[in-house]
Length: 96
Image (cartoon, rainbow, N blue to C red; front, side, top):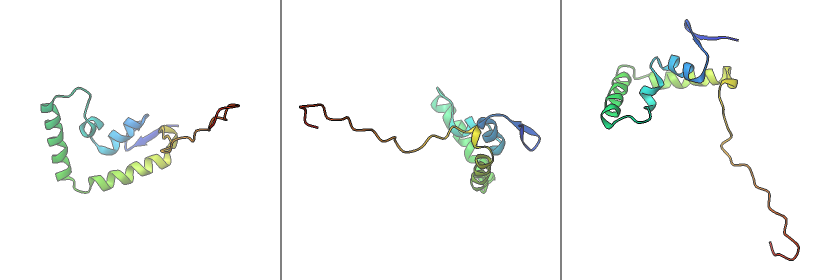
């Protein structure tokens, strides 16, 4: 099954995020090894985008929720709780 956002095909969760944002995901999350100067420039660009589009965060949350609801198989969502550990049975002659 193919999924399109507008005229663009989305084949990964990164594609969905980029198409929903209208910008590369790296603009918002950064990249490994970026310098302080690169980070400052990236953050300035992100602030400018948000200033021009003040409703963008709300729109993105709605879009992301819809994408996740429509395509749960594209996301590796792991439970937030830890599995419960089984207690070891007490060995004979040893207090638990």
